[in-house]
Length: 345
Ligand code: LMR
Image 1: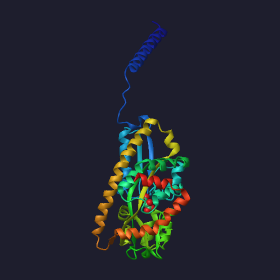
Image 2: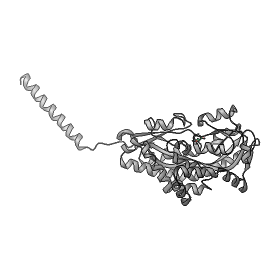
Image 3: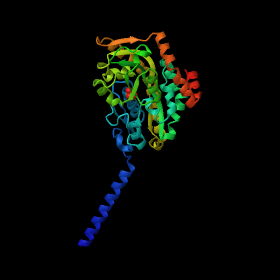
Image 4: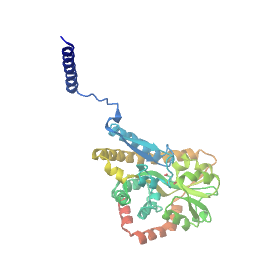
């Protein structure tokens, strides 16, 4: 056999071997490793918020992240950034609109700058109790309010709760409207809240949440309003030893995602996220009440705190004082939203 024949035979054998291997491979199913979550390209949602982890919003964000991961078998990962570590409350709505984060949950007061009608939720004494809050937040009025976000480039997913707001001061207990006279009070950015304090003869000053601790420590303010959970978890009580249980307002949150991001998500993923948000909302509205109650009990143990609960009569006096706010709201936005709120409760 000459050399050319040998090379020819070798080439034919080699080609046969390659074809055999290829056929074998194609007849075998490809085995995917279920643990390898990146196989189907994971969707990551950055969820930024400004409060501590162990608060109604912080805990709800973590629960939501866990539920989404479970329900989508790891296709969607929600990364939660607490304590304003990514954006402060002054920055987070813009960051969402730019698409720098996909999800935030600012207090409803901060949404009033975008949609003034949302001030309805900031009206003092609009909610009598937690059950009223739940009915409005999870019912038709809640849906209507969330739908208003669409034209601003935001998809509103749900309304979560923190709890009822109380009054604190470093001066004295705030019981009669006249006790507020001349005080400088830190507030969230919401016109109706500012007017509430003006009606009491105080001077409201808007300060972002991440600067409240420092400004209270430096005695830049005589008081502020917030939930027990925020007062406790952020340590505001250390500089505000007078606490009035007034339950005069409610601190709720608008859970929202960037609209363009939302509508790019596959339908099945949107459905799973909605399931997760609904479960979290029901849990959050119950858990937030318990947490505020437990932390109030803790604060009552603190000998340096002076805690006073308004009587029914005193609450009535406050309500009368705040009546002009309702008239003003009606003048500006009509009575429909207010009527629907009252009907839902
Ligand atoms: C505040 O600014 O006091 C609150 O809105 C903070 C929060 O998100 O609970």
